[in-house]
Image (cartoon, rainbow, N blue to C red; front, top):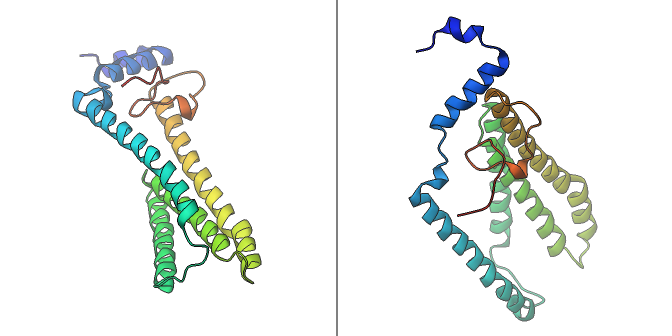
Length: 193
């Protein structure tokens, strides 16, 4: 066993190298376990199948949906959506307040709901007297807030990566987000199964 005194005698670079070596001894990538490799394969097949289904389905809808449609439960749909958006904001605020990583998910969900809100407001008011208000609301409210949410989520992920990079005693530039693998801080080496 190495004593604290012996560790204190090491240079910063030697301590960082020791730390990386200790992490490497116990740092297993869960996605390399056989059961997760199979699940990952199934998830990838499922996602590709969803894309393959949605492309022709979208074309069919483009040719078959009516131009005008009287919707039932219109108020319930919009009120329900706004309740979900409010809940997403509240959840995100709580997660940020508590400094929880799940704030990243909250920001992504909230940003996505804001983009959807802008899209449906503008598209469903097309050709009506409400179009101008919908476009102004989208451009000055919903879309800028969505951008802030997405930028906040990105900033939290990058800050987490940066903190792990430093805590692992690594030197040099922090890898770009697209180079960081799941469950490890090292740069991506390839995309194998």
